[in-house]
Image (cartoon, rainbow over all chains, first blue to last red; front, top):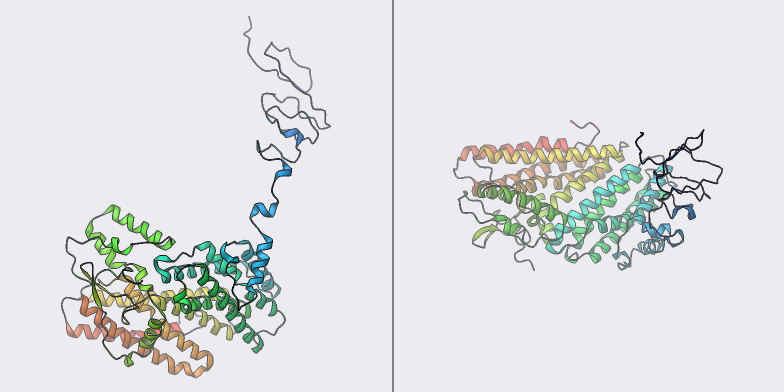
Length: 253
Length: 269
């Protein structure tokens, strides 16, 4: 007498179904789409069918058939229409970036309220633009720019927090964000340097002006945004001056 | 506002067994800064493990760096005058001590012109790197990798100067000055060096006058400073050895600064 196994029925592509012992009702919906998944699939295993119109997805993905764009579903994730727009999800607020950029353009009035929440996407944009202008000048400096910005912001972070003492609250994110935004004059310098003769007096003078512009804006923002910066304004200004002088070396040579 | 901002631990004394925990003072009121968090963690690791003797020695060697950044504009201007024209400094070279919590410690730099600080050395080092890059660029040899190598050369020079001062202290029987003090004294060379390079940028021949001047001034500054440090540190006083070693420090400035000031792409000359 053969032993009875509770084996779910196996379907072979060539033949019909073998004789199955009564092992419970198995509801199997045959796929109706042109692409037919191989029939040897064991219905106990969830088989992902990627048919757009297929109603025969495996039983474990209940939400899948009606939403062709979500493959495999994040089980319970929102409806496609409810998802936030991509830029918002990434945290890139273009309007704010535009406003912050405009505020940097005026070196004489420093509006620090805009810069209170730091973000890195504006600086990233500026650094890419800087790299792009350098590339147009024939110098491949992308990695160098990113590395130097990191080093420079660590330098400013250490110097500012040490000078400010116990109450210094400039954090690394804000520091990086400020240095990146105040890089705007240097980016403009690198764009200008494409049109001016290299090593000439004109570019040197313009470099001086733009570096002082950067320094002024950066010092103003750092002093306003973090505590206890006021009495060390000159000392911080010199640190910022060194940083932007370093980047201007990349541009003019 | 400036009171009890972590005055530097320890006018040096021979260690005795019942030392109060120096890290209590050093990390008082640590802010949320990452540096202090990192140092705090380091301090806790040391505290958690070993004996008081080790603790007292660690604090002696690596004192609270916040002390060295208590500076203001007035201090920076006057200290630059002292470093660049040390023979014009009227008055004594000793550091002022004050009793803090039962121990004698040195006053922070804002109150005492003779105290070392770390702001000027760091800024001078940055100025050196930037000016050297500028000088390379004006001769057409600039590249970002060259600037990285300049940074390394500066660090090597600084380390060499620190080693020189530390060797002097060791060979006279005690090396007990805090390491950051020695680092600060060594870093002052970059101020004079930066001025020499700035002069070279404006007029080539000015360099041949400014560099020996800088070497001499740095020699005088270090000799006077080390004399005070030695008087405070060393227990036995052996006059002739002292003087020979101080002379050696002053003479060793010349090759060191000539090497650091020679800005070409040949890193060993």
